[in-house]
Image (tube, rainbow, N blue to C red):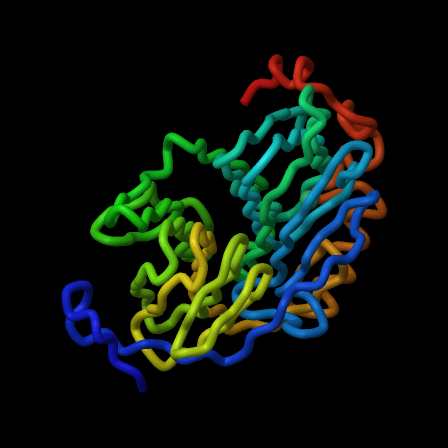
Length: 314
Ligand code: MN
């Protein structure tokens, strides 16, 4: 075990060691969407409770038109551009840079996620994380919680370190709570000068990973670059390191380990083959939550402009 040298931050935090790391390779998903998938790829099938992490870059007409979900929560974090969203209950929304959406698919949802055609012609970039739902909550009512940029506190630790506390506690600052059914800690680290040190504690029963959006990070004398996903062992109470380039940005995310079977078929996630067969049936016959699955189609699937999203409810 490694012990942190920075006694100011945490006196005897035992640091987690790196279990595995790799650079997420770009692939095509949805309709012409470019995603760098780390969790949910051949390199890391799943990392309980996490089922998928995509770093997506979209420009119309690319997107994720009408598709179903069951049995997981999706967390969408918009970094650049705008994402419009519409589901079969009639709700419509738009996410701006810094906004997040926590969606609980529960027993079933059909929705569309489409980048807004921006007046400046720019693209939309963000992260989408899938979190498994505890077995007992798989059939809960679907829900959304939008977390606006201004609702996530940003801690200015020093001139070279800021942390956006999306979920959890960092440098003494707490986020809003109870955003997801499965306990999640989610932090966005933004550093200035190369060599900026950071430390983040996590509960010991959490799986923790780090994903680099910009620059590079040094952990235990090893340098990791942009688009690298780093997975930690459960052998310590904190993650600590330093930026290895100016203007580095990464997310540090932890989730309470779920000890349950995962049977996944695309966007459907269950705990047994029998339960999965029932979900297929519900979807196919439009029942048990999927009543509107086949009569509904979104208005945004073929594209949506900046002007049009101004009228969206949230
Ligand atoms: Mn979706």
